[in-house]
Length: 122
Image 1: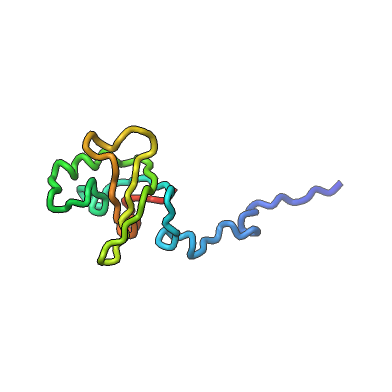
Image 2: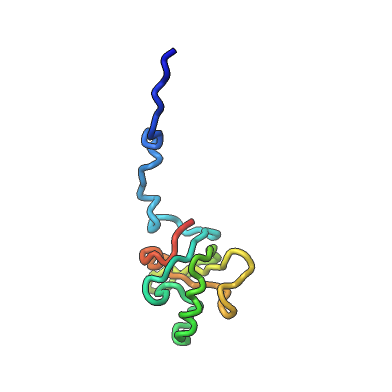
């Protein structure tokens, strides 16, 4: 009886390996409940992740406390569109444990944070 030759790379035949434009993070749709992972900061501190939107009240201790968010999984709670066209996502951590004692929600500039790789889609 003659054996069939095994197919080594079946993914190429089904075209599942090819990336499409919709797979890129910039082209994904923002939906409530989308999950993200907070990655490493793009500088010494996070540039596009905030503990609050009161920018005039931010101090260095607030920026340092946000470093504890690295590796946490957060979900999109609501979206805000700013006057300059920036899209701010309000994120809540998965589970009941807050990010820090003073921060229970994160405000993330979605497009800028994805380009800087401060957050990634899950």
